[in-house]
Length: 248
View 1 (cartoon, rainbow, N blue to C red):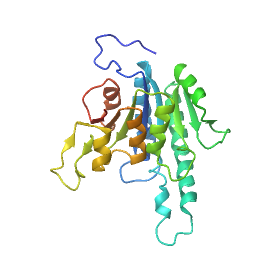
View 2 (view 1 turned 45 degrees about the vertical axis):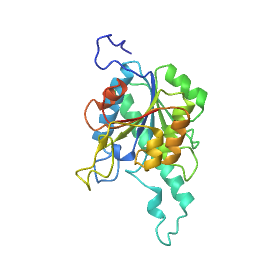
View 3 (view 1 turned 180 degrees about the horizontal axis):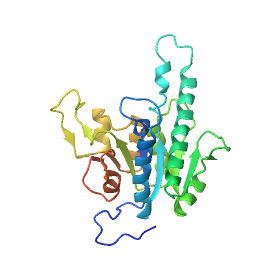
View 4 (view 1 turned 45 degrees about the horizontal axis):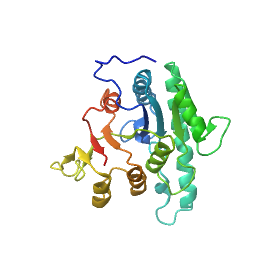
């Protein structure tokens, strides 16, 4: 890994980060499935961050493949708990795709899952995950928490606390947190900074309340930003004023 120059404008501000990637990041907008091009784009950005010496853990979602709530409407035959387990398994598909994309770029990785399946991934063990990060491997975390009714946002907050990360990066397709949905109201205001308490009080769409509360109690900052803009993951880790920063 390269040692960034002191004058490097992208010199990392954070040493260890948890990057939360929604499943939509692995596919084209409005389409389901995994896009090789989109997955490779994520991998290329992750590799550049890794090469700057950042210890990077990536929590993956699976909205591009399956959402648990899609089975919960009406008199659905599939129970909610089962649907959530299906969603957790779907995150492992994205994790495998990202792992191979990173390794095609000669970037060492480890895929760890909360649901045991040793033939394709290691079980998540906190000390083992930290050791992988210290050895310079990108750690991909899939399977959520292994429990139904828990979002991948909460999984990201939980893992960030377990791994003693410096920040949670919430990668989205929009450039921060708005007062209202900017696609519905073009006059919606984008916040540059918020506190965890403000997010909870105003019910802002950053992460679910459980995730925000986990970060609040640990004084763990969250940065919500648009990762589709080239180089934004590097800018986020360098501490550039992009997106919306949630902190105390």
